[in-house]
Amino acid sequence: MSHTDSATAGESRSLRGLLLLLATIAGVTVANIYFNQPLLDDFRQSFPSGAAWIGAVPAATQLGYALGMLLLAPLGDRYDRRRIILLQIALVCVALLVAATAPTLVVLIAASLAIGVLATIAQQAVPFAAELAPPEGRGHAVGTVMSGLLLGILLARTAAGFIGQYFGWRAVFGASIVALLVLAVVIVKKLPKSQPTSTLGYGKLIGSMWHLAVELKGLREASATGACLFAAFSLFWPVLTFLLAGEPFHFGPQAAGLFGIVGAAGALAAPWAGRSADKRGPRAVITLSLALLALAFVIFAFSGKSLVGLVIGVIVLDVGVQAAQISNQSRIYALRPEARSRVNTVYMVCYFIGGATGSAVGAITWHAFGWVGACVAGLAFTALAGWIHYATRPREGAGAQASSAQ
Image (cartoon, rainbow, N blue to C red; front, side, top):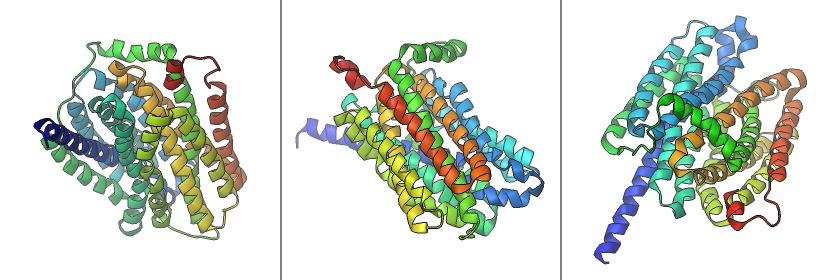
């Protein structure tokens, strides 16, 4: 092996190591906004007088995440992302401590909002990966880090269900504090500094996102499609907790959390989705994702009393949602390389507003129409995403460059 080949191999190993660290950062930090989902019935038992408002806990967390992305994620273009990540870890630990000791449901909801705002660390990790990777491998790099993020989302429910079952829901937030502090030590030792790409002041940095959204048609399309798909995804998980707690299952939070392991199939599909987006273009992968989501909710509608049907539906749902997410992000990062944090912010704010909407609609439809009604609502969000995707397809005669960007 020549000296050049050896150096290239070393650089490749170094990049893989950094991507794995960024994937870990994304997964461990984003988990904090999903811990509450399998614990909703435990919250109801702890705060029986506020049972009607239990759904506000996951909704507040996701709204907080959207707010945090709007106010904090753009800072990655202006400042060293490593420093931002460490500061946010310290602050989210404080919010988790408040949640762990919350004496009332109101305090828990407020702490959940703060956790959502401060746990947006993954939105520094993913653009960091896009910055480190060469253009021809950007989709795969984003997919690698997103696989960590998605595992965090899914396994958060499993971990929270297990800890909540045996140690109580308050211990879930305490365990997260310990994990974050260990992660911070690794970051200090291993993660390099990033290179800022903007000198704009904070006000202009935030304001520039509006101009990016207006100017970049592909960003608007990806944001709208992603918001609808994540609304469908977020609608399902809290409703699943309610379904499993009642007839005929009578399962506790651990059983609801175990479905996160089933959904890990979606995370394992993330690198494949990234490579497919690099080779075939993001739109082809998103089309497949829409079909998978529609199929998942049809399966769910007929599986209200079948664990096997629910397991199959969860696998299909997660693969579909995560493949679409990777494709959308690979697509938007190519639009403005010097503004990746801000472009990502526009997309993810819309994404989590969709998620909060889905959580709220799920709770409403569950109480009003039951399981089948919630499945129909999930299909409706998927159909809206499909309409947006179809209506914004490149017209015949468009340039090849425009087509690939879309």
